[in-house]
Structure formats: C-alpha cells, structure tokens
Image (cartoon, rainbow, N blue to C red; front, side):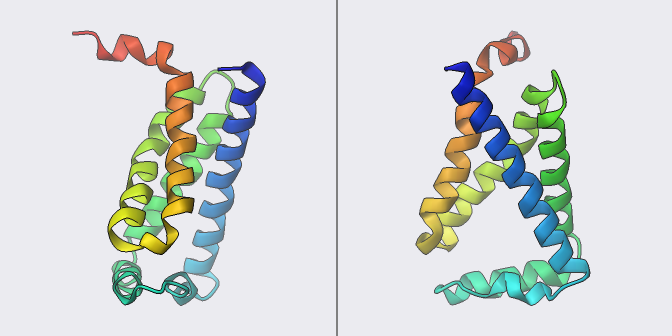
Length: 132
C-alpha cells in the first residue's frame, strides 16, 4: 500500500475512533444517552440499544476500547497493536449492519473496510504471531 494512503487511512480511522468514543461517552455520562437509540428505522435496533444502555456497562466498555485503540494507533511504532485492538469493534459494527440495521450497512461496511485495509497494510508485522 502506498505510504501516503496508509497514513491517511490510519489517521482517518484513529480520529473516527477517538471522536465517536468521546461523543458516545459524553452522551452516556453527561448528555442524553437515549439519543443513541434514535434514528433507526428498525424497531428491534432501537430496543437493542436501549437494552445495552440499561446494562450501564457494555457501551462504556466499547467506547473506552475505541478510545484506547485510537490512541495506541497514533503512538509511534504501535499502529499495529491499535489496529488489532479495534478489529473486534469493526467486526461488531459490520455484524450490526448485516443483522440488525441493514439501513446503516454502508457506513458499517466502511468502518470494517478501513480496519481491514489497515490490517492488510500491516500484515508483515502480524506474520510472526501466526507461526506455529
């Protein structure tokens, strides 16, 4: 992958992770958390988000993981770890789009594709992890 494109994707994805993590944590603790359950044409998705908010644990955990992954991606020499830390989130967003909110599948696919492109770009660094 072109070094310039790689940098653009890395910073774009890291800023997305940081901004969305901060925004959602703000809504959970200081704003109106119920706003996160609005805007879905699928009523099951709205009910699911309200149920997740009721746990008072899962969404803050996901947001904190996004923040940590975004910060780690921006640390010199730690991009590969941050990309791997964000991968479960990206897979979850893709599954959210496929199974719960098909109306948001495009944006969820973009999140996954950004993460997957960064995994591919960093593949030489991961080869050692996969050796038997």
